Amino acid sequence: MRQDSSSVPGATGSRVAYRLSETNHCPGCGQSHWFVGRMSAECAFCHTALPISGVHSIGSGVTRTSPRPPLLAA
Image 1 (cartoon, rainbow, N blue to C red):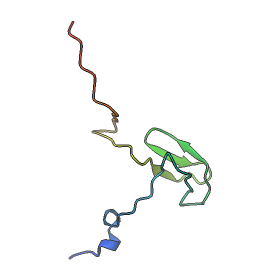
Image 2: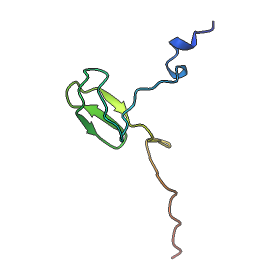
Image 3: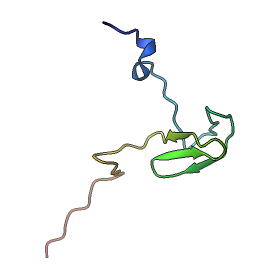
Image 4: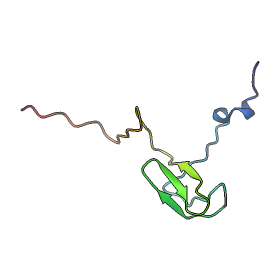
């Protein structure tokens, strides 16, 4: 059975995310006060959590912004 693309969350092209360079209003309550962590931001009023846009994880939540430095020979 084939689903309509509008009913599949990943196929719509629109994702709610916290953007570091913009004013963000909570989709739950409309307020704009956030507690920002490394991977997500949480609304200070209704505790809605959003992923931070542009943060990528590898494996079990490990993030790297640059390649690992080479090991020094002992």
